[in-house]
Length: 392
Image (cartoon, rainbow, N blue to C red):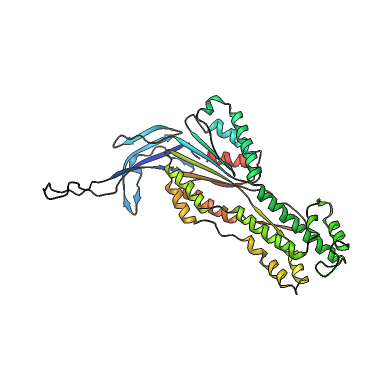
């Protein structure tokens, strides 16, 4: 995010002036031209360096293919006009609003380093700061930068984010944990069957040798999954389907909310910078090899066959909003969207396959960043990524 930006003031005539003679029988009111001046932020780079020696003649703005009249050009550094070229006198909006938007389920303590850099090097008195957690939206109080130390503000943001991530993502984490445990339990049952225990669902005692060997098959990975060993396979699969649907619902990003935020940005004056932190999501599912073995073992059970075969449908998701409409709306808001995709290492759990489930969101928000002249990065270190976006 460059601290320097050009702002163009463009004159739009929306209603043409119609000259009329003063006749007694003519209407008392005549149409007038309605002229609106619009400010457009522009960032111009050459070989990676910001161009700060441009003049009003270097810019052209077209609306639906028609050349528009540029009334003034201002060079803004931070929140001050450092150079101007005007045909008329205007007062450009130079105040800055920052939005730190967190779509994360696990708090990363390295974010504090990024906050610290932001407070020490970027934000200034008079700027606005909004922190949008998975649960709430917070606004930094006026004069907070004057009366509190940077370290105090960092600690407050840390506590708010950590608490809201814990509460706001509790259902998601619990559903993911249950999916992992069910997958482990099904792998353990299959291992027990392969070692000679009675096959589940064929009249054997579910709490006898098969159960004991299944528990043993869970090994030293912990107790997760044992609670599902006592259930019939059709009951487990019904629960499994419900959990997959729940996770997809929890992951849903509502089109209306996305558009509402774009509308808020458009109504906000001045320079607007959005930093979207989106944490990589993985869907824990039953290992495909285990599914194939169950399909082979239950060929005479159509319900189990159909349920197992449909599991993979939950792993694919279309982009949950109209990306072209969203790109246009955010481009019209004159805000710069900076997208930071926070990666994390996948777990290794026997019997469980972890599938990337955020490709759709990554693609959508990456396009939004490109459409608004913002920065995007995929990183395992949120502090480094945030700093790169601030300095880009």
